Structures are given as structure tokens and as C-alpha cells.
Length: 321
Ligand SMILES: [Zn+2]
Image (tube, rainbow, N blue to C red; front, side, top):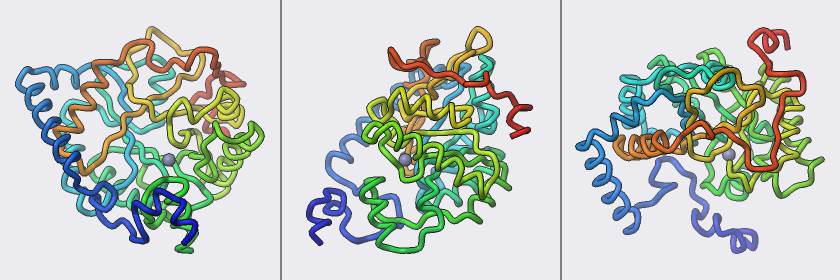
């Protein structure tokens, strides 16, 4: 109990598991006011034609979600259908290959899910039914975990989230069979900026090796917590030295048509949304991000360099690994 008293997330969530979206984001007066403001903004934008204009821009926009509870399914399905009307929905492999090749001709969105909660399997099945594919970034240390206390401390300490079940290895194999990909999110959901370079390398390369032992080649990486303050130049170097083709942040933004082959890996941007949000709110955020993006999106912070040690991994090179 002493641990709980010192842990703000344990105080906030108590001992209950999350089984629906409201367990994670309880309705508050501030939340209701924000909901009203967003609905008004989204409506004004739609009436002015600004929403459709922004969403029809040629770009690649990577969406970041974390869970799909039962009560979120109807809105999630509506969101997929709404986006599919004007967007290509390629695989993460294809979308990131297009970003690396500077070949972005159409409005394009691709879904990603971080952390490996069990409800991601539901999302993977629904996406596949609608012809969309996603990348699921997972931490091998929690895959298949059954011990309730270990799950609880991982959720509260690492994810700042109420306890929920996690995917098991057969679930990840099912996601791969459905055409999705599985990416690396470090062994323990580490804040890479708060550990030594050696530990960060072990979190990155160790997770890749653990995932590959069970699932085959893992080409994509997304760093936990997703901000520039949660990453370091050394850790970026370790990501590409470990053999990843891509490295994704959770910084908002989307990728704009380039002028040709991109010779160094870009910093992938992702737009966080929650499936429980009204569609109008999600589209409002995506449109705002689409309007802001330009050719500098994807640049690393000043002084950070990123390169593939053996040149850009191509489809052929990846197939040989
Ligand atoms: Zn995460």
C-alpha cells in the first residue's frame, strides 16, 4: 500500500481494471466543456469547407492509438469508413517506404497502436475486415504476462494507465496473419532519455531480438512516451544500428510529398487519437495537423543525426534478413 500512496497513478486509478473507455478518461466538468468547444470548432470548420480541404491534401498521416474497448468499436468503425472515403490505407511497411522514397501522391493514413494491450487484437481484426492494416508496437517483457501484480505495476508505473490484459504471442501471430506488422517499443517501455546509453541500447536491441525470436523480422521502432524529451541522439543511433528501417515519435505532424529519395531516416510523426472521441473531434485534430505539415516535417531536432549504417534498407534487403 505504501507503493500506492507514493504513486499518483495508483491513487488516480485505484485497483480497478479498465474495461471501457470511461474507466481511463472519466467524465469531468472540464472534459465536458472541452468536448463542447471542440464540437463547435469542428462544425465551423466543416461549414467553411476547411475540414475537407485539409483532409484531401496529399500526405501520409500516421495515427497513434492505444486501445479499443468494446464501447469504442462503433466510433472506430465509423472513423475507418470516413477516412477510407478520401484516403489510401496502405500497410505501415508501404507507407513508411513511401515516406523514405519521397513518393507521396495521395491523402494517406495508416494506423498504429502502442503498448500491446489485449484490446489491440480487436482493433486488428476490425481493421482487417475493412481492408486496413496497422503496426502494433509492443514491449516483449509484458507479452503473455498473467501475473496481476506485475501487470498492475507495469500499467501504473510504465504506462500511467489502469491495469488491462496484454496480448500474448499467439495474438501477435494472428495480427501478422491478418497482414499487420509488429514493431519494437523497447523491452520494458523505457524512457530512453532517463537511462544510460548502454541500457538504452539493450532496451532497443534486446527487444528487437526477443520479438524476432518468436515472430520473424522486426523492422520498425517507436520510442515510449514519444516526445523529443524522451529520446536522445545516442538512442536514435542505436535504433538504426540495431537494424530498424524506421523510428517513430508521438509528436504530432504528417509527412508531405518530398522531392525525391530521402537518403537519411526521417523522424516519423504520429497523431494521437482516441477511438472513443466523436469522429468530428478526431477529424478536427487530423485536419489541423495536415494544415501544419510542410517539408520540414520529419527533420530531427538540431544536432541529432540519423543514418542507416548500410544505406536505406530496401524491400529486397529486408526480405533477406
Ligand atoms: Zn507506449
